[in-house]
Image (cartoon, rainbow, N blue to C red; front, side, top):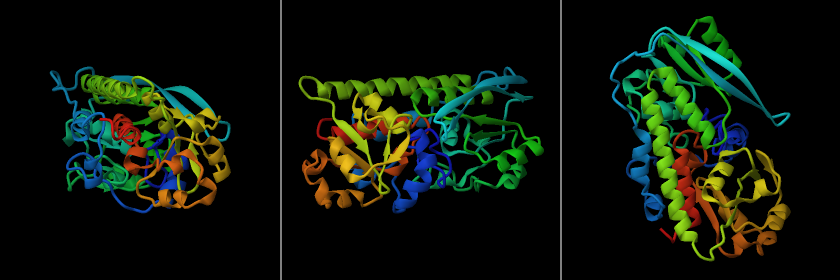
Length: 366
């Protein structure tokens, strides 16, 4: 849901950029630790659901956009200048600054410090250039790559700067939620490092993909990945628009988790709703990022559909609340469960999350 999403499991809920940070420590800890299969053989529940685009084919298209390099290392050394954004949760403001990193040669030993960055690199790089990944990348609850990464690919923990340095990387890609001690140790060891900023929607994710292409010398592959995202999103939107042709009103939707947090504006969940042309009722009511609301407020908002984490039993809890008995979503049985890995999406796979949400909202239509 959030831009900070595929951060580390302890910090992430990233279904919405802010999600992983705020809900990471709130929502994820509140959910049961059941896993969902990403790309590949889909589990029974997912296979039974219909989506605008066939999910395995979509995942495959988003997982590999590598363009053979005609001239390896072309354009190096280079000074990569980029826009770094930081979100101040206390003031609800975005701060921007210009940063740059000097790369003497094309990086061949790359280590990403976030799941979303790993997913981007997996799609655009020769895989042997990834020398280690964060341990969350092999957890199906947090990573779409969990079943794709080689078993022998080394992993490390959030604070394991010494281990990362020991792999002798020539580029480490960190994120705005990487802790300062980790960053300090990389600087002290003079490891080339680029820190990626805050993001909460598809445009910001696309900007990060293009930056990853410039840093690695894989610009063509990065541009192709962005083009695939645009193409697949258009296909999803066309299918949804066909479904809604005539008198069908776009539903109002609410994300609601076990700790009573809703996802408002400035989250990737809101970005998903915008892409599908549906109303994120929390954002419409003026909520930014994540906020707790009580049952009385939920009843007043009265959304058509409520989305809850698939790995929880929160749907049963909501259905059992007498105070909510008259709510539209409760009366019509419209509480839908979405796997955490899709809620946390913080890379090109946000398009797959949009596809999944469309399937939940219009599951009998495709």
